[in-house]
Amino acid sequence: MADLSNANLPYSLDAEQAVLGSILLDSKLINDVTEKLSAQSFHVGLNSEIFGVILQMSLSGQPIDIITVMEAAVRKNIFDTQADAKLYLTKLMESAISPSSIESYAKIIAEKYMVRQLMFASNEIFNLAGAGTEEPQSLLDFAESKIYSIRSEKDIVGLTPIKPTVLEKVKELSEIQADPKAFENRYISTSYELLDTKIFGFAPADLIIVAGRPGTGKTTFAINVAVKVAKKYRDKKVAVFSFEMSRHQLVERILASEARITTDQMRKGEIDRNGWKNISDATDFLSALDVYIDDTPNVSVGEMKAKLRRLKGVSVVVIDYLQLMSLNRRDMNRNAEISEITRNLKIMAKELELTVILASQLSRESAKRQDKRPTLVDLRDSGAIEQDADIVLMLHRESMFDPETEFPNRCECIIEKNRRGETGKFDLNFIGEYYLFESAEFIHVNEY
Image 1 (cartoon, rainbow, N blue to C red):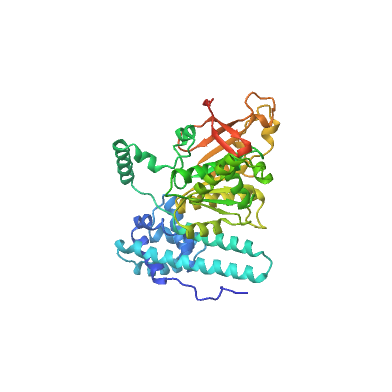
Image 2 (cartoon, rainbow, N blue to C red):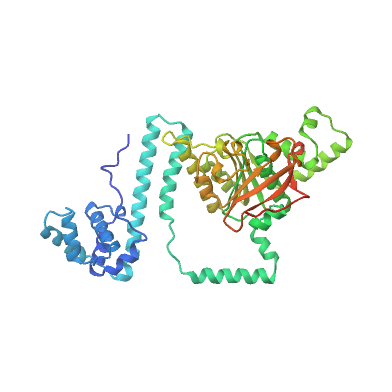
């Protein structure tokens, strides 16, 4: 097993001493480095402890100079005596640099720290792989998680002034006023008009949850939306990751909805001349769409991301469905695993600037209530699903609970969460034999 305890790890003693000495001379400089550095960023243990003391004093509003830091360091047993403390802190002050250079020196410390973190992460991965106790997929997920945590730490963006963002927003509004289509270009239409009026459409970095009980039609709705996007926007690519059905089953459903031929007719070969004409037309039309399907089982979020990067230009990703995804982590319970998956999917949407439509099952609790309509508490396995999502759509068909209902094809699409505006609900027609959702002629909107 590899051991880094005695390894020659990268660090810059000069940079560490220069930053600490400069802060001791001018306490205001702490504000220039706290965004880049933590106590862990310093490799030399003594320097790390001193920076930790300075940070704590800064947070509590205490004055920072050689005397106050010396007193605090001795109280924390960092030094045995005041004489030892004074000697080392004086040495640090002799290493001080120009205030204008401190951010550059802090950057050196931060970069060395990142390289050390990568070395430690690589060592953990190496040792875990060498132990031979983990499945390869579990190892990949562990490695990805380790590297991602280092990247996240590096990519933290600090506070930025409001002015450039305000000016950017005003410019955007001016463009929309001059050309209404400019607004449409910022969002991808769902092709369901009433849904668009509520959420404006899909935007890059969106995580959209489509939730429903088994058999409600969440997969059908998500795939319908994907195909509608590909139809309307010929310059946009749509990718589908299917964990439940094979690509042949998905394409059969898509062909059925486009050709208005039931899958039962297809399987039995009971197709008349008109039916074949519809299939031929639908085949030509669908073949021209930029839709890609991946039915590989157990694909991790990291693998998805790699595949989407290679494909390039993907605008919308459909994943069917969340509860079939796994990290294969033995150290996580199911709730924690689901939380990590949704978090990583949101990050993927943001990083690749695309919309993720994620199908998700609902728990059985809604079926036990008098009002069967689902709510956010019915999201299965984790509250993080609601937390990470930008928009949560829930499908409810009364006919699943009451076969005698007046409108057996009615499906309520309930907007339970909407970061861009109002919640509410509207009706769709569910044509089950064609695996198709259409806007309902009897549409009504109920605000709540």
